[in-house]
Amino acid sequence: MNKKENISITQQPDLILKGTALRSIPKQIIRGEALVSQAPVTFLGFVDAKTGQIVQEDHELNGKSITDKIFVFPRGIGSTVAPYVLINLARNKKAPRAMINRESDQGTVSGSSIARIPLVYNFDKDPTVVIHTGDYIEIEINNAQALVKVYKKNK
Image (cartoon, rainbow, N blue to C red; front, side):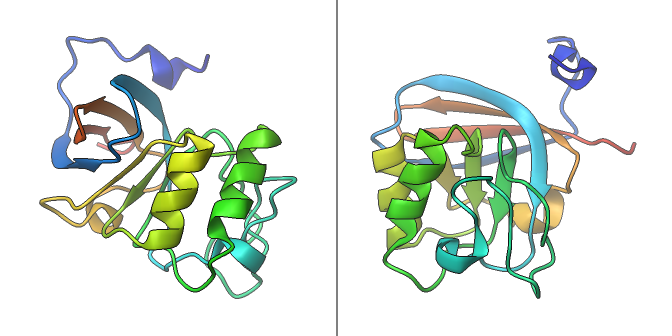
């Protein structure tokens, strides 16, 4: 456990976002470091399911791993194979801890549900603008609602 995960429960978050969680994801709290992309993601061809790395050369996160991160991106695009890639990321233990999207798309929603990767979306503020790579995130999911607490890395 890294020291960022030892944030005192008395410490106030720098930002709180309210959104929607998948109904298939049970009540839980997910904590971790954010990895943020301003660009949408196509899981087929963009993400290596064996390593968890972004492998699309022209993508801003090329070479970065989504494994064990809170992966924040606007939305998925393109492929109906996204569920297959997300399932394989989970099977290979290379999946993100959770995903945060500005808006939902069918491939990411269905893949997250099947792979049991928590997905939250439909926020009151654009998460790709207000969350930055390296920020510490705590997501509380309860009854298809999400409360995302953001602790800024650079205050």
